[in-house]
Amino acid sequence: MYPESHDSLPTRCFKVEEMIPDDLKEVLEIEQLAFPTPWSKNLFLRELHSDLSKIILAKSDAFEKRRVLGYICIWLASGEVHILNLACHPNFRRCGIATSLLEHSLFFSFKRGVRKAFLDVRGSNKEALALYKKYGFKQIGVRKGYYSDTREDAVVMVLEMESKTLLEKLFCKSQTINRE
Image (cartoon, rainbow, N blue to C red; front, side, top):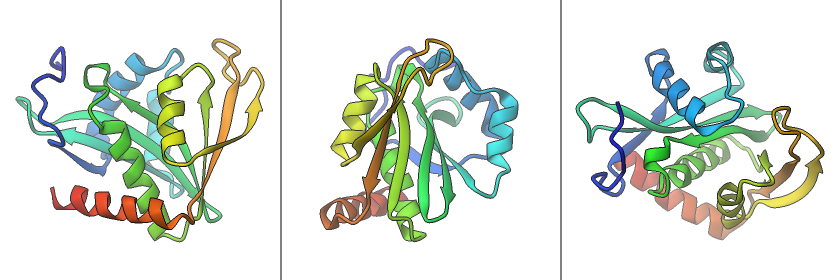
């Protein structure tokens, strides 16, 4: 069971690490709470075992047992990273988890030679759009009626990872994350 709010969650008291099969139950719980059409258990298992895919978690020891607070799923292929899924438990939104997961994923990808990041996001998801724009993602298109549950459009975004300022920012934050 998750606490009802993040008021007791000290800033940055979580670690960023790769998902293991034992994390699946908590990831599925967050997925169910975060999306109108959640990914299935089988889809997460396929991603977990794919050579192209990485699922990275934010985990906290601040509770009675280690808890998954959020996750990001990415594909690394052909010199690009595709952000497939990013979600935080609703009780822990707005405390830096999505930002840390995004930064970690971009830096992880950059270290492997990736210079472009792509993603699709619901046009109505203003918080996600603001986060991606903050990191320099630019809209390059719209997929009309992309989301089958609502027929909502997907905004297609790209980030050119050549900006020295962005990379320095990611490098500094990644070093902080890795030391925790």
